[in-house]
Length: 303
Image (cartoon, rainbow, N blue to C red; front, side, top):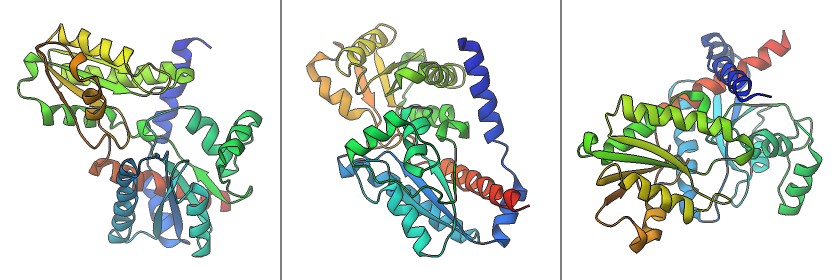
């Protein structure tokens, strides 16, 4: 499929998922309770799991404060507990049979397209199942009534959040260059490029920064070489560099610190610390809205 076609289909998918129905929210208030599993990737270091945990707790609190008949639980794909299967089982023990799963992943990747559906028992992909078995992943029993929702990119909030993060560190945008780091996913590169281009456009057009660019930094992307090269290129455009991470629960400060003496000579490099897209109140509100819309699918099926 040609790139333009892929992007067009993906964009249309985002638009469709963003039609958040007030009718669906009203239906779930009156009907049986809805369980919401907030599915996060999980990390070996607990410090990176704290923000997703806090996010799920805050979403759950806001649901109850708003009088919604909904309960949220965190579930991790790997490295941390509770697992996604744990979260589903916990909700069902509480007598909740209608469950929606909202993945707090940045955008499309092998995790959202293959791993999550296989873990949830809504899809079967032999190679993915083999990898999950090798990793000891826990699977939700097939046939469990649940609906899988979209990743965070479908909120439309990524450019705004990254712009807010940049402004927090900025002193004079007209004299600064912003560099956004992201993990990326090679098999879904066009989609990642699309979102990062939207982010850099917002930084330039709305933020007024002198320059903005992005680089894929993480496992499989040459954390040392590519990220450091991008920093040196950014330093040629401005003396002060603002570095952001398009990550769910971590900033870019640890990576910047890792390069130490290899950083561009004479450049003032500042990086956001200890957080990425989370925490952000608009993401809380979006998860609640999209979960309510997804819950409406149960009522449509019943009709």
